[in-house]
Length: 281
Ligand code: ATR
Image (cartoon, rainbow, N blue to C red; front, side):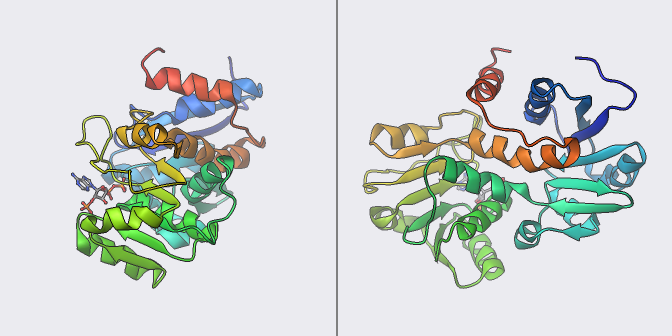
């Protein structure tokens, strides 16, 4: 696929960036829709992010995705923020409009959309349990409230971090100790892992899902695609949602804003990304 001198430009800024799936994801859509556009990886060290942020619109970039460790810096640097960015204190998608930079957090949309696609339309009468209280947990919790959850039961190794997240979102977050999980799971309709446990190179997430009788288990980890948690969920008849779904859905709003096409998640796109994750490409 060739591009012209008028090609629309966007990219993903992170440090490191070599393992990002976003260039493959956006590149797939650019080819699918036959666009004159390019989406490139941008390896930007933390100390260089503010300079790069200023330079990129001058280089003609329409915007960018922002991943670790730049999401909070992006939040501070943009000129305006959407509700999801305000709710999470983090920006993962930037749209340059003239001299202004609009900051969005599409992780919130991405996670909510992965649940909707799995048939979860409303959480108004569902008991929800979230594991973890880091940056990823903030996006997930905001998404759960956007789907009508009245409360979120939060479990985290470090109590102070759980309390900090509860202070951010208010009384709708109920903090529990790890030991409370079996009881919580016995009434839960949705469990979400936002910790890094279960990821390649990290310790396993050791939870017994047996007390959970029905509902959905979602993992934001996607390396491996089927984490031991999701394998356990499927084995006992619970619906499992992997982290690749969220990753693909969070990319949609940025692509639409920069390139002018609303992209869709197809089985062939998912297959393409799965083959990359599995080292077949
Ligand atoms: P992210 O932005 O991806 O959420 P993070 O802010 O570093 O990353 O948060 C990582 C989450 O995984 C935290 O909830 C962390 O628990 P702590 O708050 O106790 O650190 C959780 N986590 C990471 N390693 C863990 C481990 N070995 N056991 C339990 N929880 C772990």
